[in-house]
Every structure is written in C-alpha cells, then in structure tokens.
Amino acid sequence: MRNPNSPLIARCFDSGFPDAHDTYNAMSMASDGRLYYVLSSDKLDVGGQMFRFNPSSEEIKHLGDLNVICGQSDKKCIAQGKSHVLFYEYQQKLYFATHVGYYQLIDGMDRLPEQAPDGFDLYPGGHILSYDLGNETFEDLSMIPDGEGVVSMCMDTQRGNMFGITWPTGQFFTYQVKDKKLTLLGKISGNGEAGTPGDDFRSLCRSLVVDEDTGYCYWTTIEGDIFYVDPMELKIHRLSNAHLRLDYFGKYEPSLPGTMGYHWRQIFWYAPEQVAYGVHGNSGYLFKFDPKAQTVEIVDRITSLPSKKSGFFDQFSYGYLGFTLGPDGKTIYYLTGGPIFENGKRIEGEKSIAKGAAKGLENLHLITYEIPTNTYQDHGPIFYENGERPLYVNSISVDTAKNVYTLARVNRNGKIITDLIKINLFP
Image (cartoon, rainbow, N blue to C red; front, side, top):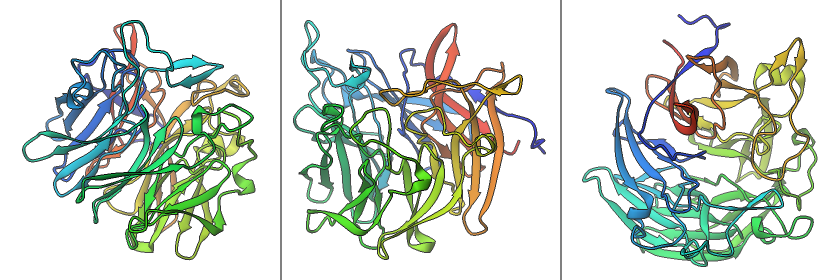
C-alpha cells in the first residue's frame, strides 16, 4: 500500500517520435481497452503522429502520420501538426480532428501564419477524421475551410453528430456522420483568437459537452455566457438563465489574451444525474451544470491541497485540461498544479502572460473526487524516478486498473520532448 505522504512516481514511455511537442487533450481509452493518443509537432514540415498503447502488454504501436492521413504528405504546406481534441467512439470507429502546430509569435501570442514560409504554402485547414478499430484504417471525412484548424470538438456518440470550434477566428461547426455533412454556423465570440487585443480578441472555449438526453451541444464564451446548438435546427442559442460569471472564479477582461476568463476549462456529461460536471481552470472550482433547469452549482474546490492553503491560482495561465470521469463512472480524475515552496516561501511566476503557458514552475498533483459521496483526495505531487517534474500536462486517461496516463514533457538524452507517461495510483 502506498504511503499517502509519499509522492507519486510517473514512468515514461518512448513512442519513438523525437519531434514531439506539447500536446493538449488528444488521448482517450477505447472500447478495445487500449489507449489512443497523438503527439504534436510544432515543426513547419513535420506532422503530428498517432499511437496506440496496450495497458496489458505496454506495447506501443505507431498508427499514422497526420500529414499522410490527411493526404498532405506530398504537398509543401504547413503541416497538420496537432490533434487538439479527444477521441470519440461511434460504431467501432474513433472520431477526431486535426489542428495546426506551427505558429508565428506576434506580440507574445501564438498566431496562425499569415505569410507562407519560403517554399511552403499556408496551412490548408484541419480535417475531421475517423479510425476504424477493426481494420485499423483511417478515413478523411471533411476539411475545415478558410485554412483554420480545430481547437475544440465533441461528439454525440448516440446520434453520430460532431460539434466543434475552429481556430483562430472561432467558427462553430457541426458534422453529421450519417449524412456526411459539414455545416459552419459562423463566429461565436468576436474575432476569436485572431482578434485585436483590447478590441475583438476573445479566447475560445476548449471543451464542449453534449446533453445525452437531448443531443444539444453546449459551450461557453470568455464572458461566461453559455450557448447551445440543437443539431436538428442548426441554430446557435444563448441560455438566458445560466452563466459562469461567478465571483469565485475571479475577475477578467474578456478582450485581453492570456486567460480563459469565465470559460469552463474542461467538462463532461454525467448520466446518473443528467447534468454536466466541469472545472473552471484558474480557480479550480468544480461545478455542475444542469442545462434543462439552467442552473450552475459550485460543488467543491478541487485544486491541490497546497493550492487550497495558499489561495493562489495554478501557474498555467489557462488552467489544466487533464480532467475526466474515470472508468468506474463515478470518480473524477484531475491533474492540476501545486505551488512549490523553498525555505517556506512560495515560488512565484510571472504576473501575466499573453498566451496559454506556464507562468512559473509548479508541481503536478493528482486529485480524485468521488461524485456520489463528495469525497475529495489529493494523492500528492508527481515526479519522475530521477526526481524531475512532469511539465505542460494537459491530457488525461484512466484504465480499468486505475492507472492514470498523460502526455508530458520529458528530458530524453538532453532534449525536452513530450511523450506518454503512466502514474500508478495503487501499486
């Protein structure tokens, strides 16, 4: 039995991709009991790579290059560097989408390149893809127009409807698998992350949720409004009686970069109560959202214990995406930050930052929260065997043995890359 006062030890795996860069979401367990994930690339001409991990044998199999899957391998254009979304399983296929990984840094912000590098064309646009679990083949279903990537996506896995937000301008789209139809419904928040700070810039929602009863898809704007789409009607509506402008979440200026404001950071549907459970990234408050009653209720603060005691937000400017419902259907798993203290003094980071990034160094903690019993537990900080910290962690998946997986920065032969790590909660 593990000593609860001892740190958790994370074990690294080598997926064989030396260009792997920071990855967001992009991992899920499938019905075959195996873990599927994409490692991102920030290179101009290197595509992201998709892998499969078998928890029983710990075998890793390379499944494909996103450039090749999207039919882009022989084209001189900016690569399909990322998948920024979870995998969703529908009729024995995994559905996901691609995103751009190569940016221009302008005024401290990651921007979609507007001028093609010498010898290359601009990013052609993200793709909606499927992967057949049975015959291990990919299908390119649709391409996002106007050279935009897919920054957020979810799927109604009962009805076969996909919903997403493009980057950088923030156009909302639906894709109906049965009809093979892509529909764009327009911009949802100013000019999205292509906007001008102080004017029409708006950070975009990174997590969407489907009400499994109605099939409606919900998301937030940085101002805290909650919107939804009825896939039969294909019109955007704003909820009139529910929002996330809660004092507990903090105070934000919506037109400035470097914050998710009043967005929920990550959210999932919880069928036993017919509600969604979400987390506000910076403040770390767990809440439940009832779309039919149009209510938002604070449940608990699920930051690390050191964060609770210090009263400070996490150092990652957007908050963390590693928040999911475990395989038991009742326990939330959350990978979040915890302050580091030296000589009794908290190490502080930058006061502000103009993009989603770490303001300073902090520990990574694993939190569990059992919904029916309202039981919170901080399992402590996580370290590698050599004592180094996993950094830039914004993904999570849990197997049936309660092993926790994520994608994190690792030091491999003196080079910092991102790869799969495993946290054994109950050794």
